[in-house]
Image 1 (spheres, rainbow over the protein chains, first blue to last red):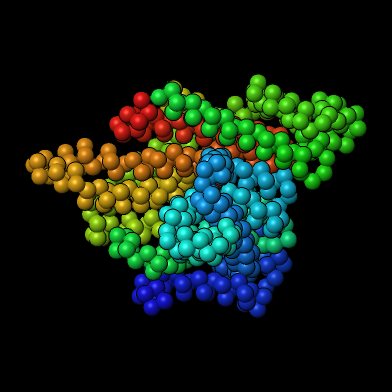
Image 2 (cartoon, each protein chain N blue to C red):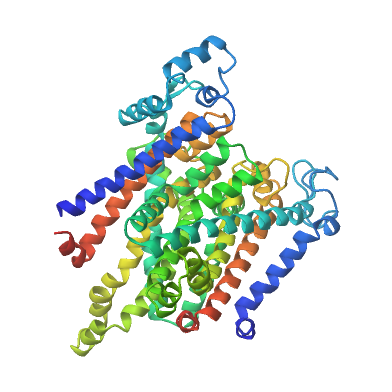
Length: 273
Length: 324
């Protein structure tokens, strides 16, 4: 932790992230208005009555951004968790059993990686109707392959080590060996990649909701930009501020992820600087 | 060579069949009647029309017969029919192909050229302020949502400065010589291409930077230095070729994302390509068009992957030997 905080950019990322999480948790109290409610003159510039202005329907931009933080983080984290689960399962099984199973699992991974993932996501969300669940599933379906490859590589190098042999000789079954002996040794890599997956999931979600593929019951940053972009030339603030929110959130998570990486893999840390 | 080629063909076929089965399954798994997916919003209420669709797509036959029919249709280039536009889906996509190829191709080249160049610069000047600036810019590049970057560029260069057009591919009603028209398209292309390539420029810069660093400390560069070769020759001939390999490999993998990303960018700039078509069909619930776009973009990605492999073989003699 000390090492982590001595890294200036990681510490800055952590501070930003904590603020964003607080904003998301306290959105109801912090936001001056209901994000859906028309509170004043449409397209009011920022600074006057509304800190960040209002949109075409006279909704407060700041309130939208605060409430949007909750949805973005929720979808980002849940989608990352689901794709980590898929990726770890596929990678573990492929690396541990090897042979045919490995060929099959890696073949599947390669196919998913080749398919244009954004198009697949759009198709999935469109056909199953936009909802938080369908968006999370769609993001998870396209995001797991890199992690599966990483975990497989780690497992391949771990499975012939003495401690795994010892566990096997002591009569432990395949599943306990995978989960109790091998998995904890991959944990650092999984945590680093998982945190970057959260950032990526937030970007993907914002792009989907920009295209109009967002849950109609929640306000999201992408939706705010998509719904007011026709007014860009009249009211830049309606697009610029929600986009800044996405940018800062993703940047913060990336910085924290890299900070964690430098702590876990100190050998690589020097090479980046 | 033959064996490597055969493996390639099998992989390509596997990807295609997976995409097609995926499509097939999606139409059947979608909430509601598959007919409503096939017909879109247009005619699902007309009982006679629904019955004729049922007949045509053999929806009353067992599932494997349906799949067989669908595979055969796709194999012959039949991607379905758009009942709203009253035209075959394949025609609609074919018409939009040049615009998308122009945009993604330009972005692909732009991101490789700029990414590799700035990566070399940063890798050679490690620790200088120029390198540090690039590292920070890359961090920003990773975190920028493409659609938002596009809108901000429009705001700056079209709305405020009025230097570049904000949308479309040509000025409406523009006539002129062949050359003037090309220049007009090029002006429209600048902002979308920059928007689409920003993320990849950041990615390639970063990979190239660490790759240059790795190669720099390798034995053959030390040997080249010891042989007294000029700095220009060492960088140009020995270093670049080797340092570029990871970037080219990555570029092949990223090609699919580039095409997917063009959906968003085409939407922002009203670029008349496949991505824009996908969004329009999405809004009109014309799922057959959307599924057709999915198949066609997959084919494009596969083609780009094969091209990348060929480029890799040209750049890296080891691969050429292994394949021979």
